[in-house]
Image 1 (tube, rainbow, N blue to C red):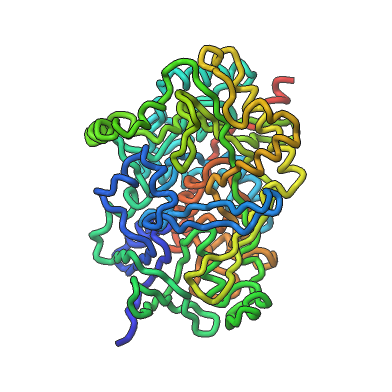
Image 2 (cartoon, rainbow, N blue to C red; image 1 turned 180 degrees about the vertical axis):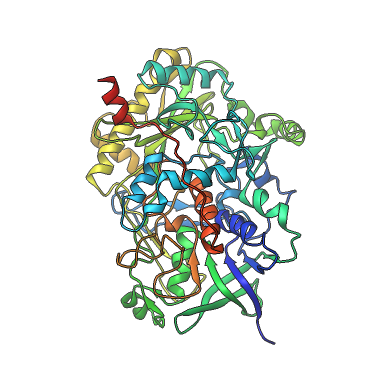
Length: 558
């Protein structure tokens, strides 16, 4: 039997894949197939639908690819656990639901590279606006959208610890801002989040669910793609397997990889696109020598700085198992502590005067708890998550064999550079400065982690090496850039993979540099913009909105 023929096969039904599937199938003439290796995001699955249950899917083979890094040389040889969503909606179905666009100057940095002129902030902002419905923004706010599929709620941040933290940031000399995704990112504010009416709003729920009945759209879950099929240098389809069934083939005019910064370079390499010398050593037939595939890996490392709380006002009691039935009942009515992701406020700050825009991000939580759900000994507590936002530590994603089910080697090289180590020391000192202001004194019962024994620069670095966790923002492993750049993988004007036909990549891997903040929002923006490029539509007109620049503000003040 001849393989089925589609116009577009999208590999990966995660964040970018969900958005693309919606936009490409809007034209009934386009026959679109989405292949997702994970399970469906069932509406009855409380672990992914309940915002506060976000610690449960991570580490579970039912939802998570469960990656680990190679031993990190600057972190005592630790293997850093790295969760990635293995479910429809991808990592947007298991992440912290925090919506951060990054700083406008992130995109100016992108656009400064050769061939990247159409990825500056002016060209990206219209796509940020198109995709969102920001409930907290004024109707005439030129930075925010009001009719997109991604409904954004702003964290209420009503717990007294939030109020005290916000005041403490001002006492420490950091200005508040109205909206970290608006005119001014720098400062502290309530955060936007992908939560709507007490439920997680993943990319799948926002983009796929409303259009699943389109006759030209097919979504196939538990479909594990093993390679891209080529005729010469032209991609003509993919091979995949469902469960333990036989390998199947499907043909398409276009193959679009949306597997993310780990899976997309892995699949390219398995299919013969990558560093020819490395692929040849594994016995893989080389389709095209493209040395940038899997290089340039970037991420954010973070730590939690935890304090004990004098007053019984934290969210700690809600962790008690006996409360679960009552909290669950409240959640059914879209209320209570389970209806929030808890990351309701935080902000962005510069740790030194050398940087042009903020290099630190803070998330404040009125509870002391780790991603895996573990809590410190003792009662009430609170914490900030902090880490440098644009570390110059660069790693790689490389397959180890021809087996598509073997996880690739992930090397992040955290703490490997002078800049990274310097900014980590600064990050801890700024966090402590914030958390020891008078506004928090009524609640401050002493630092739990790292604790007073960690004080010198070296002690701080040793602690970060021992305690740091990934913020789960892997990116940049198939970076955009012109064909003249031997490290580039994807053409920024079309999202096509250099040197081959019929193959594109649209996900976090195409970023040239990781953005300053959580990466979900930028990934969705990339998908929205890519949809227009793929369909040959006129791109949205660039925005003329002027945004805050610290250096300009300094000059005006001086």
